[in-house]
Length: 83
Length: 275
Image 1 (cartoon, each protein chain N blue to C red):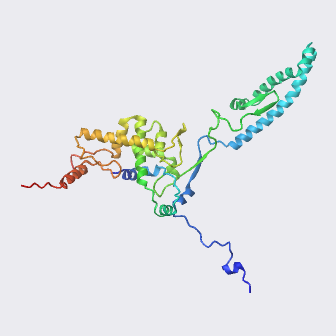
Image 2 (image 1 turned 60 degrees about the vertical axis):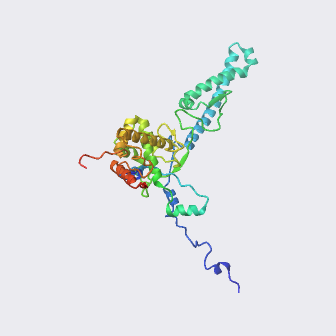
């Protein structure tokens, strides 16, 4: 599971504030950005989720951050016994 | 035969031939851009008007009081066997009395204003002078930054964003998702502000975040790497098993990791031994 899927599953992406658009000096680039939405949102989402983990680490330390990372599926998951 | 210019163009000149429709443009989201002043949203024009009104009232009162005090001081000086002293220094005596009386007058009329605006100083007992051209910093008053407004997007990276709920209910929603309660919610607010979003101050303590969540993201990335390395050591995973880049696509499913490592091993070209 990647960061984008995590944000989609937990609806965290609805609460991330995106950056303002940068007006390109090159008009062709500007047209391309307007037409196709060239900005990559997966990078924004990945940074925000890493930042949430970092915020929890600064807030209450490493055990809390590890627990949240585990709940989000950001750790190696051992196979269950029945599987 | 002369043909007028407007007739040759086939219609009035002011009629727009094309209407630029930018509804599909990303800049159409500027219409949804919300403007908010930062914390301490005080109307400084009203504040200034109130303050200037107080100053003018004080000036009038002090001038009225000045005439009364001058007359009283001169009469008392003349009557109390200090005629020589009053003739030598009548103005200084009067001004000292006036200064004292005017300061007491100021504190009696608007004590709160005097306490809140230390630059309201009394010069020579006659006029109140605003010795600062701009609004000063007040510890309990408005912010020193003034009434700035910043432009930024509403929350949400996806296309269907900008609802009022996401702007208001971000803290309880994310805390319920993470099953974690923040002691300092401004850290979460900082984590949700991507760099270049236009928001440079978060929290009730007005903490500055010029780079958005870049600092917290670097901390979180290193922490995730530490967690994975720790787990890999405890599980005795070799480096080839978890040498998957942390940037997307991520995959932490152990079975998938093992499959990938086996596949990689099987795809390794066999050595050809001769002889």
